[in-house]
Image 1 (spheres, rainbow, N blue to C red):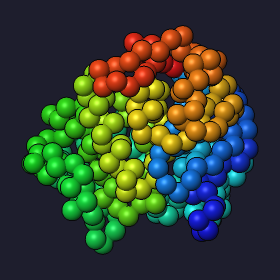
Image 2: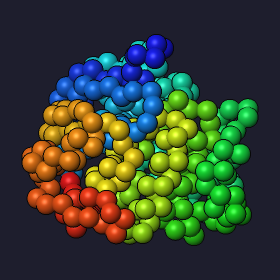
Image 3: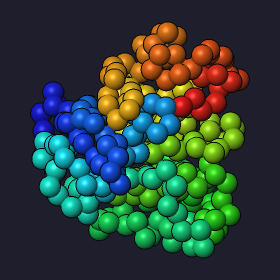
Image 4: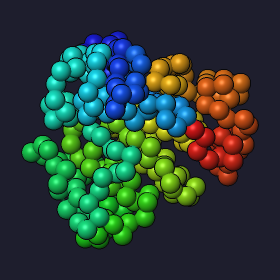
Amino acid sequence: MSAAEPLLEAADLHVWIEGSHILQGVSFSMPDRGVTALMGRNGVGKTTTVKALLGLVPRTGRVVFDGVDITTHPTYTIVSRGIGYVPEERGIFAALTVAENLRLAERHPKPRYELVHELFPELAARASQPAGTLSGGQQQMLAIGRSLLNDNKLLIVDEPTKGLAPRIVREVADAVARAAEQVPVLLVEQNLSLVRRVAGQAVVLDAGRVIHTGSALELLDDADRVRELLGVSRTVTDSSGTTAGAEGRRTA
């Protein structure tokens, strides 16, 4: 893949679920570095877009990853090409230990435990602890760590701060930022403070279509565009000095 080519391209993706036209021609691309945020109000098709990229839902259109057209590939082949997926519900095995959860994720002969433990030392310290007893932030670190264990070229992280307290959100932001230093991240997120902190590019969906692409910071610095595209009526500054959506909470 040429350095000028995007890492991931989606072209004219359409998805129908139970008779509803969920994605209506979604097209966007993301570079081979940093964080690209996929944003939008609830119900506009963000998670469906992720599932369409991974072949988890029937779709039409075209998906190119790392220079290869993967549109017709089954999900296991897409993942084997180097895409790590951290789903919205995290997908950890609560009854298994942290170490067992990581071991189940091994896909390559030389899993990158040194990298995972360097980025998330708590996972090493809590290796024998049942994953279900971890805090929400620690569980998210485990979910991200499983994807980093393999030599992936892209991480797709879906709503990592959903349902978490503000203090834990900061921990997750740290985890995403550290992960993005190692591998590009497509981040589905509605917490504007997290997007502002970690994302370079933003893709905004509405009613199953892409309605904006460009610099994340330029978008978030334009209060009128944020209000128009994301439904945020005002901005505030959180305890770390970061401008966020109304009351610094989830805004879609």
